[in-house]
Length: 141
Image (tube, rainbow, N blue to C red; front, side, top):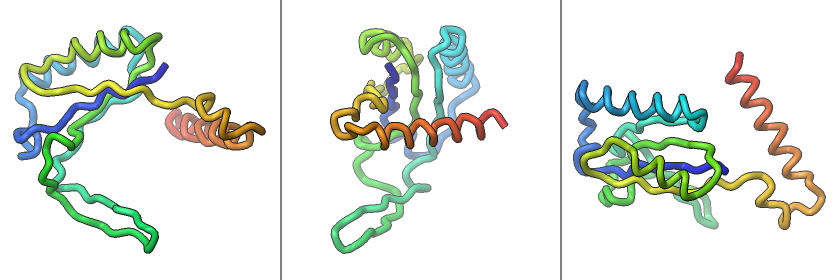
């Protein structure tokens, strides 16, 4: 089972302040634990919303709005994607994040098999697997 651990933005993260050397060290140790456990698939921090844009879709097309965005509590500041055996294990890892303050949301990532009822022939799942193989091959190159 794959889970995304979403780091919620804060007023501080939205200023663009980079982590201190101590904070980087603590996060590096945590990331090393995830790697040693063999569960880390990806993990990154994000620039503040002032450097981002939102694309909003409607029946008449799309609109682009540049940041910053007002609702800090609704923003994402970073993430990890982990592969574990259960939701409980994902939560246990999230509880170990070395934050003194903040919030991490844990959400399960869909797998191709979850869409089987909407794809009875398997055509869409086969195409998805083909695309994933291409991405993995590119990452190894």
